[in-house]
Image (cartoon, rainbow, N blue to C red; front, top):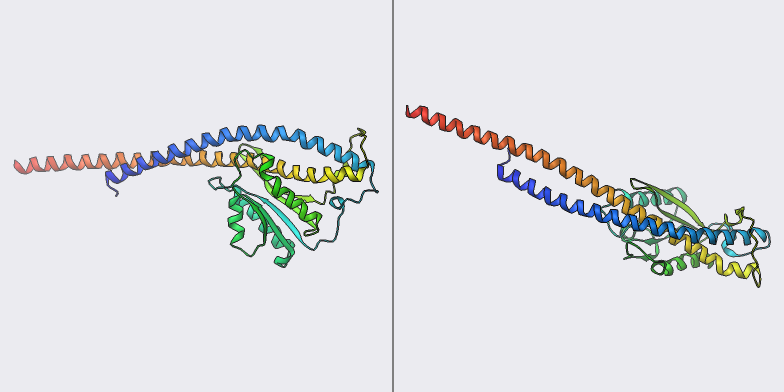
Length: 286
């Protein structure tokens, strides 16, 4: 049996750990609130841009030849992977990495058939140690990223498709469902096959023509989708970390209760032994 000093040390160290996890839980809860507000506010922009692009594409269906709208034979696939900068978020990063590895295994026979673009240090650290070609990476993003933080890598990903370096682009990330639930999504970002399905009836006047308008709008739309997914993923990350830290705090509380019970029993046994020794000594003197 452990000594009273050892058990007391375990109790104190576990209490310190609980203070840290509790603080991290509260910080993540505050960040989650801000991330939700940022993601919700950005939805209005992407919804309006989708409406405009969809109406122009639908009104000119059959006459548009923009490369971002054209499906072509797939020789190489790109995967845009959104992960966190650090761990301590439960299965948040592992779920995304697992989905990417599964897609690669099911869809490709050679590493020449795909490449990855990674946002987040956890994903980058995973894939750089494996036989995976990393076309680009973006590390060190803040907890509340702005569009400028990802503009360069989003433009690079879209440019790779336009330049036919890749023939399709998938985006894999964690979607925020609730504070206790996240869902891994793999979305086919390019080609933009769904923009012509808009049912809106609004009419827009534009010049000089639809092709030139979409030449500007489609890259902005695709880059906006990437940024919107990043905001969604950030909200999911903060929620996952908050839940993980809450679970750690609860586990620490259970350990403290367990160690306290052990300490009390050991202390009671020590006291009982001392009393027995005193009684035994007194009896011997008689």
